[in-house]
Amino acid sequence: YNVRLFRLDEKIGQAPHDFPSVFSFFLPEFIPAAGPAFSAQLAAPEATILDMPKIIGIQNGMISMIKYGLSDCNSGFASYPGYKGCSDNGLYERSIGHLARVPSGTTIAEMVSEVSLLLTAGRLSQDNRDTIEAACSSEPDYDAQFRCIQQLIVFSTEFHSTNTMQKSGEARPVATSTGSNSTEPYKAIVYLYLSGGTDSYHMLAPHTCAPIDVYTRFSAIRGNNSLSEGIGLKFDDMLVINGNNLDQPCSTFGIHPNLPILQTLYNDGDAAFVANAGLMSEPVDVNNYKQTLGQLFAHNDMTSNTQKVDLFDEFFGTGIQGRIAGVLKSKGLPTNVFSISGTQVVNVGEPEGVAPFIISSSGLPDFNESPSISDMDTVIREINNATRKDSGFFAETFASKLSEAMTSHELLKMELDAVDVSTTFPDSGLADQFKMVAKLMKTRESRGVVRDMFYVSQGGYDTHSNMQVNVANRFTELNAALEAFVAEMTTQNLWNSVTLVQFSEFARTLDPNSGDGSDHAWGGNHFHMGGALAGGKVRGLYPDDFVQSSSNPLALSRGRMIPTYPWDAMWKGTAEWFGIEEGAEMDKVLPMHGNFPSDKLYNASDLYDVLFA
Image (cartoon, one colour):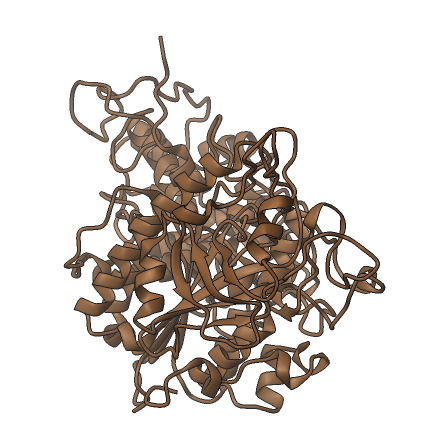
């Protein structure tokens, strides 16, 4: 008989054969974004999936398991078994299986002690025991009391960590939206991360170039010879755009044929590229590139540092969007930060900054639908009230994240359920994320914000084999999602208020491997788009020589390019447009930008139309 677990990856962040990346479910260096573990910078890998959708998902599933057995009832872990209804009567008619233990205790205090021993190794505090006994004593019979006790204990921090909990006797503070009196016009940044290391020279290739025939050099390094066509974009397949930049070695460039939305927006002045950019702490070449901090060519480290843009850890543990949000908050600009793709360091700010929301692309399910006792949410909050400083750090991490998740869920669900989009989005994971971004933007007034930042991601770019086919498929999905998002932003009259910035941890080798793939490299090309941009230009500096030699200052082995421009180049002008001022504010948002000459950074006046800058 098959046990049919349903969409566990969406509900709890883990599922058999459904890893989010090659690094499985947890990041070994992950530090939670809240609580004493953050202040002490203690790694807690399991907290990688401790975000609002997954906390709500696992707790809903546990409640359902206890009340109804393994089923689909009220967001349970299983699929519909094909019979009966959902009844909290101890009969489990709809379940595939159920928890069958019969307690040996005869009083409610004995049952709490027994379940505490089984589920928390006896660590459940006396304070929580008293709370649970009082809450469940009103249940009408012995079995109902036992189910109530189990439900409340699986909400305790002692169940979710091996720490003990010492309460301070105070209620945990709850953050709520207070609305905004700001007259600032609304603006939003959407951070699109292409995970795995995008082969961005397959996104933007040289086309017509003089006096140097860069395309011939490009085709050769991509493996085109008498025996093979290689893996480079074919000259006649490209979607051609004018470079509109006399500093570039080419007058025209070619976009991958599966990304027509980029050509359309570029020609309309609503999209642009920065060529040969990457994560850098200072300008380097082949002679000194190894002094760059961080583990070049490594997924985890480059992903984390690309999202932080702070290689010297001046603002330890924070990401660029989190720092932007913190500065804007200090200036009185109400700001929200969202990830539609799990917990991400890019959105983490300092403790006094803006707490990020993490939301599933499928929206928000009901939390604790049909509670077993009255005021059950209040009891859950009481079980997880504020702790003393000597309480277990990881116990406090769970308690604070649970309380934060419950508050975030309550604040957002009603608003999200009341809005919808006008555009039909395609059926893909990335499109679902963009659709949720569009819905969240519709709630901006009720949330009382004038600034929003969002994180969305698309995986599958670690193309060590069959690069052309795999990237073409990824780009097809990306193009469809972007088309729908742009259409919806136009319908909402927000296109001039939105900037989408695209990043990836690194580019890939131009020289193919034996499996028609490309491997980890460094500098590459990335794009941004939005109605306010002064687009239609390839900025940065596209390489004209890709082969390692004594006369080439930028090429490493196998066509690994050293970036000419840092990530800071695009971020500086974007941050200025968003409200960050030059000086102390920009030094906090981009702590490395002072290491680069001004001609390697773009101001808002460079990137945006004068009407919108």
